[in-house]
Length: 159
Image 1 (cartoon, rainbow, N blue to C red):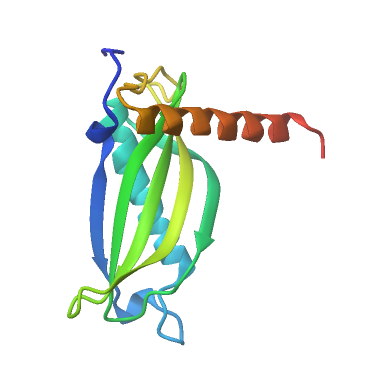
Image 2 (image 1 turned 135 degrees about the horizontal axis):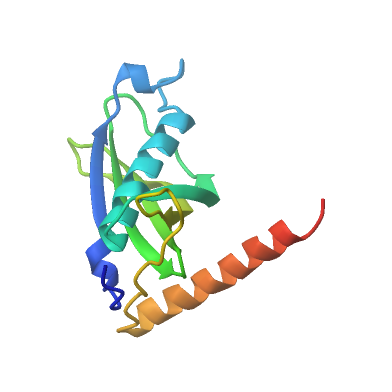
């Protein structure tokens, strides 16, 4: 497997889901757990596209529900790798609600997840570095490195 730097654009994943009654609570809003499942799926596709191999969810860093999506509305997910490390990648998934009839869109959730690439034996394996080809991607990688350092320091601190 090549470990040449990969462009952030190679990881871009977009998904669209229609909110049906079985996806919603008694108030008609999509279940938070359903949104989380779609986020995990979208991020998994993103990680596997970028890494060129299977990748598994390791961490959900931040996930905040901003505004609900109701039955009959559309959920749009867009994900991309924001940073690459030795065996893992950080992925941002932005979720919008949409009224298909009017085109109105709103932010529903912005989430950060970490995925670890695994080899054929289920062991962590190296991932390609992120091509730092513009200021936005360099800033994304740097911010991801800061978040990773904070995660690792929390894990090392006894409770």
